[in-house]
Amino acid sequence: MKKVKIAILGFGNVGTGVWKILLENKKEIMKRSNYEIEVAKILIKDINKKRDIIVSKEILTDNIDDIINDESIKIVVELIGGCDDAKEYMIRVMKAKKHIVTANKLVIANWSDELFKIAEKEKVLFYYEASVAGGIPIIREINESLTANRIQQIIGIINGTTNYILSKMTNDGISFDEALKEAQEKGYAEADPTSDVDGYDAVYKLAIMASLSFGTKINHDAIYREGIRNISSLDIKYAKKFGYTIKLLAIAKEESNKLELRVHPTLVPTIHPMANVNDVFNSIMIKGNAVGELMLYGRGAGDLPTGSAVVGDIISILRNNVKPSDVSDASEQSNLKEIKKSEENESKFYIRLNINNKVGVLRDVAKVFAENNISIISVTEDVRHDDYAPLAFITHKSSEKNIKNSLEKIKWLENINKIESIIRIESFN
Ligand code: NDP
Ligand code: HSE
Image (cartoon, rainbow, N blue to C red; front, top):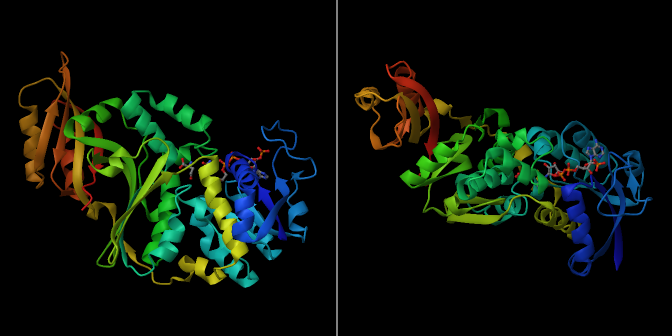
């Protein structure tokens, strides 16, 4: 049996997951890769930190040079996260002619062009399956299984932390803060959870998937983004009443060579399978012009699911069945596509107002909507308080521009205290 030495940069949630899988599935991995894998070095930040998994002192290092300068190490797995050090280490690793596996969407979404070019120049492989949707093999699906298709649409729940929070708020009635704490304890959240909660993590993942799917380089700054911080238990309750569940969706659609790209909380019909993707699970629906609709489902975060994707990439490198150019698809696309402005997008909307408890308010609001060509499907008014009441609407499909113009007028109507929530509705057609 041939032997290969690898190094792991980072021994946190995912790094330890990779270690456990290499140990637990050693026999299967040997059989499938034809190699016995030895973890020769593990890079960590704090050498004195107490760790749940004990590894020999010779393996642990806090100096990247111990890995770069070790010619016997052939593959390096980057799992430290963040951007500056991670990017610098990956470049140095490739220049030292070692293959790279990473789970770092932040680096891929920002610098894939530069990194893939270096990989090509240095003739090393660069794999990043775990960077999108944890254990779901979505990158291979797009790059290999679906290459016969023109991809028309991707709709996904691609952040485990926010899906965990929304599921717990919806199904168990716990608060946002409690649910976030649980997600952090389970190792789902990023080191800085604002990246999850404010939608940045999903934006990076959508940029990676959409670049590969639509054959164009997508700058993640061009993706419309809203996080879940403002979702209240009242919105969850009203959404249920109207027959919907609130999810953070990442949406990419191509129509007439124009791309619609957005990440935001969305009302999903409760009977749709996406509404029933709970906890840390992710799900991605892809529509291709040949295959039609396809739906993938699995754990989007966590040590072993993410480790599964990382170790799968290591085995692929050992089998060496993909040429470097096959994984650099996105960087080769010079065909830039136009991205629609968010005002051009259309959907149904859920809107919740806080109004004074007076006669005629509903009539005044409906009048403004009508003037802006927006028709209302349903209205619900719940418990009236002595002097105020919540009022929620579902509209027919309308342009974001018309909704924005209406709300700008509604805000100034007599007896409107506040526009509390505006959430888009996805109809999946
Ligand atoms: P953790 O914070 O749990 O672990 C980070 C590890 O990297 C720690 O061992 C830390 O060392 C080490 N480290 C951090 N910075 C440095 C540095 N500058 N130099 C050397 N070592 C460093 O992160 P995760 O395992 O959760 O995430 C790792 C990567 O995987 C990220 O890119 C993340 O986005 C991605 N990912 C994470 C998923 C998850 O479920 N957690 C799922 C999919 C992708 P020390 O132990 O000494 O502190
Ligand atoms: N923080 C990320 C999530 C990890 O919650 O989905 C997986 O990329």
